[in-house]
Length: 119
Image (cartoon, rainbow, N blue to C red; front, side, top):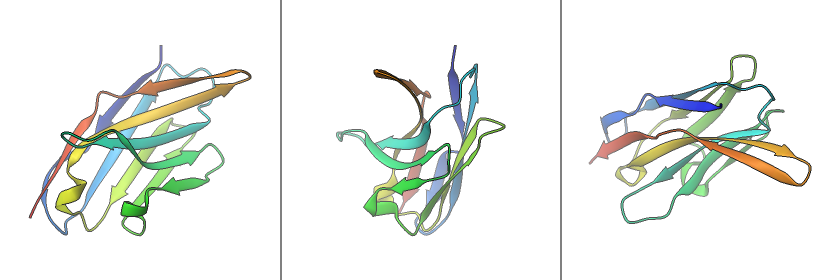
């Protein structure tokens, strides 16, 4: 059974940095895409950043230039470096992994880690 465990969240002031990590276990087949989503109170969950097994990245416009996603395929790790944090980055951040097979895909989620940015 695939499990994703996030770490690295916390409380910081605006302008500071954090690094989130996600360790995946129970993986037998490579995950095609791994990424980070976030959900703020009263809002829908949104994509923050994703990275394919080949290293292609995708970022939400709101974090471009500030956040960097990276992945270690051998260790099944995905990380999110967050610079110049803003109060609007406050949310629960979730790690996500997707495995695509012909005709369907499997989505896996971590339990989430809280990031709070004070002004």
